[in-house]
Structures are given as structure tokens and as C-alpha cells.
Amino acid sequence: RKRAPKGCPTNANNRHAFRRRTKSITSGATLAFSFTRKLDRSIFMPTTVAWAAMRRIGRGSISVGAVLNCVICVGGFTVGLSIDRAGRQRAAMAQRLSSPSSPPSPTSPTTFSFPLKSTDSDDDSGDDDGKHIIFIRHGRTYMNDYLNGFEFGGPNFTDVFPDEPEYTERFYDSPLGPTGLEQTERLNESLSDIAQMGLSEEDQHRLLSLDLVVVSPLTRALQTMELGMLPYLKKLPSAVPIVALPEAAERLFLVSDIGKTRSELEKQYSYVDFTTGFETVAADSTSAQAGDKPEASRSDAHRHSLQQDHDRNAETGLQEQWHFTFSEEAINKYEEWRPHGDGQVYACPGEPEADFDLRMNRLHRWLRDRPERSIAVVCHWGIIDWMIQESFENCELRVVPFPSLKPRSLEQHDK
Image (cartoon, rainbow, N blue to C red; front, side, top):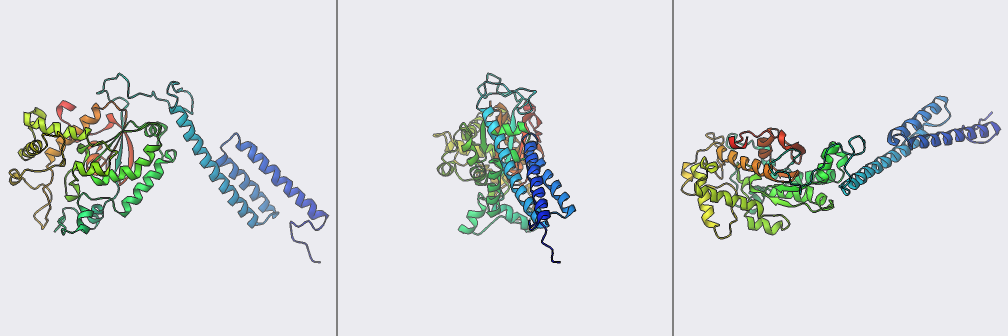
């Protein structure tokens, strides 16, 4: 006798079985939904439905295709719940930030368990308790790509390129390459959903309540800030000042570390403050002329360079050529510290270690003395390595307590 397909209500028994299965599925879904209102919906719902489906497969009451359809639906539902959950977390965090008058409860699991500090407080600016630095390394550049195939300082290494636009645009003050642009896009996506970045709630709060952004004046750092951070900064409830600081520029290794003039950068990035940080550089030049002790240990070559820059910019008080340079008289005293003697040819003198250490001491002191509690610094591998003695990948972001910094050679009066 020809049998009717399972699940088709062609006779009384099949109709009864069909109604029983429908009722079971309906009651199971209702039970799951009621529990997910109280428990973690993104975990309990798929577990409940999958368990019920496996029982029915064991009895042969439903097809594998029906189970797959069920799993697909549950997966979509779970993703939707996860997105909704993250949105609720962001909304709750924004609400807490918009109500600073009500202090967080240390016993509540939905609030932060640390005291919030205002940048307008009367605390001593030198007190670094609670201050955090958010280090961000720039994205991958054309020079990074070049060094990936031609090891820095290896035999016959050179950063002397033909004087053609194709080379000058890529390697002089080297901008982000295609990979670097993709990295900044991913950084922007991560900042748009910081709950998924794997940071603690305290560090998420520090990102949401940024007080200041410091950026190196080199093009690759400015691009990383503009493409990777600026969209996020615009969404914050209050405006965050962005200051270009020459002290945060990479140590001068190659032509890629020679930056554009202040005037050129100011035209291209009009929303960035190119005055505050550059006044600091001009003041250092003036100190060098006065023979201040902190600058007295500089190399003779750099003191000549500072004298030359100071004379050239005496009217404006601002540095145009802000990166490390030598005067024509002092260049003859330069001693090459980069790998040499095996065919290496460099396009420019490198920044001596003593000068770099002094510049890093000034950067450390500048960050220490700022009143802001949460400061983002978009800079370079060499800067981060000197500050915390750890290596960063391109576009990597880390939140570091200021007291946890490990400067390589902090001057005695700063220790």
C-alpha cells in the first residue's frame, strides 16, 4: 500500500501528529522567548531551539532541511540581539557621561567603579594620578612597503630616489599607502563600536571622554588621525582639541621623516592647532640661545641649527622647518650612527641619539604637565618604543596609564 509522506495531514493519525508537532514547536518557542526576557538572549535562545530540534531529529519527526532553516533564522535573530545589546550599552554609557552630577555607584555592575576627574579641577597639573595616554601608531606607508622588501641599513641600502613626482610624493614625508588606508578604515570602524574592541569599561570611558588629541606633524600621522579618528571625534558630545606637536614626530632616520613646513600643513589641516606645539619648539630655540642647562647637553651641530632657525623665525616666533636639521657649518661634524660601510647611501643625516633623547624628555614633560586626564597621541614606532619599550603594529591602539610609562632615558630632573 502506498504510504503518505510524513508530516502531511492526509488521515486522522497524520493530522493528530501534525497538530502535536505544531503545538510542541509553538510552546517551545514561547518558553524560549519568556526565558530570554530574563537571561542572556544571545546564548539561551539558540541553545533551547537547537536542543528541541535535535530531539525531533532523533525521533525522525522533522527533516534536516527544516532544522537548517530553523538554525538560519535563529542565527539572524541572535545577530540582531547582539547588535541591539551593544546599542543599549552605548546608550547607557552616553547617558552616564551626560549626567556628571550623579557619581557612579561602586557596587552597581552597570556603572564604572572609578572616580571621574574633570579637566577643570583645581588639581596640580603635575599630578599624573589617573592620567592615561592612548597611543595610536600611524598606518602603513609607502616607505614601510619599501622597507619590507629592502631591509633598513642592509648592504647597498639607500633612501636616495630619483627626483620625480612618483618618488617624491611617495617617500618624502611618506604618506599612507593602500594598506595603510585600509587600516585607518578599520580603525574608524572599531572606534564606531568601542564595546567590541576588547577594552575594559574604564578604557572605553576614557575613549568616550577624550580631553585632547596630540598628533605628529608628519603626514602619515595626520592622515591616520583624520581618516581613523576624526569621524569618531565628531560624534563626541563636546569638541576635542587637536594639537600638532613636533616633539611627537618620528626620529629622523630617512627622508620619509622630513616633514612639510608648518604653513603647508596648516593649509591642508586647517582644523588642527599648529600654534601651541610650534610655540614650544620656538621656545626651545630661545632657550638654546640663552644657554639654559637642559639644552646645554645638545650636540654642537643641533645648537647651530637652533640658532639658524631662531634667527630666521624671530619675527613670527613659530618654526616653519620644525624637524631636526643641521646647519651648513655643523654638518661637517656629523658622525654617521646608522649602519654604513657596506654600500649604504642615505639622503640626509640622521638624528643623533642624544638629541632624540632630549626631545623625548620634552615630550614626556609636556604630557606630564598637561591638565587633561585622557590624551590620545597619534605618533610613530620610535616614539612609542621610547615611551613604553614595546612594539606596536600599524594602526594599533592601546590605553596606557601615565605612571606605567617606561621612558628609556629620562633626565634626572624629570625622574
